[in-house]
Figure: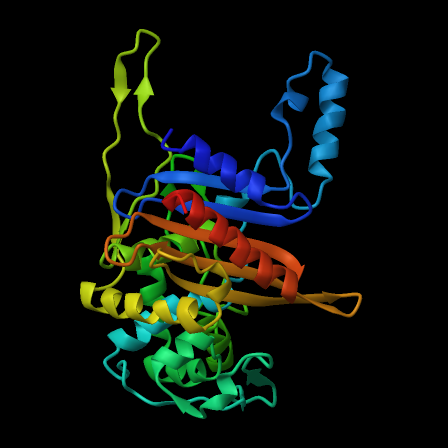
Amino acid sequence: LTIDGQLQKTAFEAIPDDLKATIIVTNPKTGDILAMASKPSYNTNLLAVHSTSQAAQNLKDISNTDGLSPYRNPAISNPVTPGSSFKILSTVAALESGKFDMETPIDNPVSVNYPHSTAKMNNFNEGICARDTRARLEFIFAQSCNTPFMEISQTVGKDAFTEVAERFGYGQQLSIPQNVVPSEFPSAEANEAQMAQMAIGEWENKATPLQMNMAAMAIANDGVIMKPNLIGKVIAPDLRVIEDPKPEKFSTATTPEVAEQLTELMEGPVVSGTAMNARVPGVDFRAKTGTSQRPSENGVRMVNSWMTGFAPADDPQVAITVNIQDVDYNTGHNTAGALMKTMLEAVFNK
């Protein structure tokens, strides 16, 4: 396999046992998957016991564990709302449209009504987005402001958004060689309000952790996504090499120029924004965070937390994605940053 044993061990042991979480590390230049770990997990020996009745009981126990299935790898089989990590793609759509550039001031109200609705899109109450009622992409991206993407979604339009999502891998068939469940961007049935929600990674916008890793891979590799791959070599019993997979291009997600602009924007969250808790001295890390709303439990607001990015900026060696599901905001934000920091330290020996 392409898996780096030490990185895999570090990723698996870093994830707290009581969380539903995934960590993926890839090489954006080749597509090689260096680590792909998820919890909850189980000991596969439980399904290899001699007693068929015991094996059946163990299978039942495993299947009854929330977030765990012996048949599904959460990293590639469980699309969930990506929250603001999707703003990587939304910002690409904005820049490609020619209607926005790095200097364009965009309205950034605290809240704004969705089209034809009294429901409101809000900026994060605990952030500093309210500081600027009109802001450039540098501030909007670093602080993960939501409301400017209302204007962006309406100006760019459904067709352009759909095309960008497809180029980045949404709706595409992919085998690593395990089959990857396609991520979902159901724009055909979306109205203006729902498109605005999808632009900030909500409504029926659903992405696997691998999909959001591919978003980071694209920006790290001058707009080109290399096909994610787990197979290093296939070797026969007599040690003949049967297959020796070579790096393969998956898609051109955007232009090198737009990728360079996103690389610049992805510095903001780490230096002064929502990803500061993942910062590692001596590592030029570029990232985007995401917090997607989930139904409240016992009055506690629940979220899916994301962080996806790459390092170092001038010669990217790894793209890393962290996804934590169904946790309160503080747990998600703090743990995603801590896990990302752990992986960066492991990769760069810090």
